Image: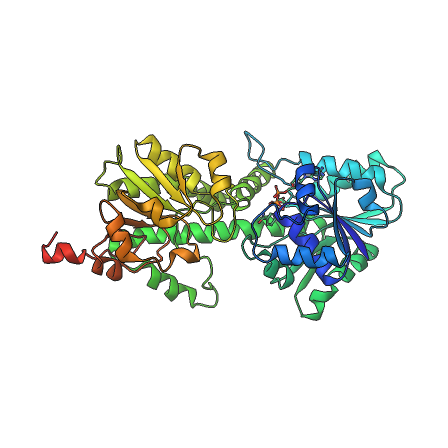
Length: 446
Ligand code: NAD
């Protein structure tokens, strides 16, 4: 079977590469000629672990190819996946569907034989039907069915998530469409992945409800961690204590600087808009969004407090600028709020990130970037850990102590232990865990 995937970003490229790995013929299409040229030359435009190997293997086997030419890509395709971006629309937070509708019109003009048109992009409830209307209007004789197949992969572990998902959700309403989708996901049926067939609207809503729930869970533990700070409780133990309850589960219970990334911020806003328009507002999601916005600024306050309330004229070394580890994606990263806020308060910022510097530079050109984490710390008044890259988990603390002008560490991912940091003489601030007096100060040495 042959498929075409429109949009060769994080989702389209990963989906296309994985479907080709399953054995299907896949043509990935993008309107960005630069991106397609890179892919044709064997270069992967994004950082995603293992993606390069998968793309290389399947292009060599002739099952995966790249083009800007949608009409050619569609020849003989049984399914066309729409995996274009759906960013927030300026002003009202609704998903901007310009790219989806533009793709729908182009597809419509090229439809020849029966084809299943699949929305893989995250799209508000009703979009699938709207796409069908556009196709019918543009090409009244087209033979097609719509399907909604939202994607749940996480950047940083996208290949594993696609190949071994918790579930696959498929909204479609004809047996013909179900048959095509079933065949495409047959390799996952074989490993007993739950596959849910639903209506178009239900599939579209499942995606938003999942992301909103996860955003809410993260915000919940962030608020609990603030409460721990006030009460002297330890959020790591609270997380473990509640996460061991099978009804709650341990994931997404790690406090941090607020959620970010290409999905949660825009998808919560879009769901809020959908719910308000449907006269069924989601007050829990609204509270989550507003708390998360505040949280990022609160993190700037914490860093200022660690600098004795006087960030002006101080130098802050930041480790990690991407919204999470194992990706170069900077979309809505908490660093994009926290770092400019520190600079607004008069601090100078030096930063390191294992793969995100090129992207970060586009958004925050006034930061000094370093290719080595220790170089970023040299002479800084404080070190802030903002993204929990694995390479930051076992830093040389003795070396850091020597490099920093003052031994202040603000760990917004709780990757170090307060007692360990105190033993090295750091004034260490983390989230929701009682601090321990630095050893040197306890002894009255420094
Ligand atoms: P992206 O911005 O990385 O990629 C989108 C690509 O689509 C771009 O390369 C763009 O050039 C291309 N494009 C836009 N219009 C086009 C057209 N008419 N023809 C051909 N190409 C076109 O986006 P992404 O992160 O891959 O997200 C895509 C969708 O998947 C979004 O709806 C997003 O919410 C959803 N999603 C993303 C993730 C994630 O982790 N990134 C996870 C699940 C779902």
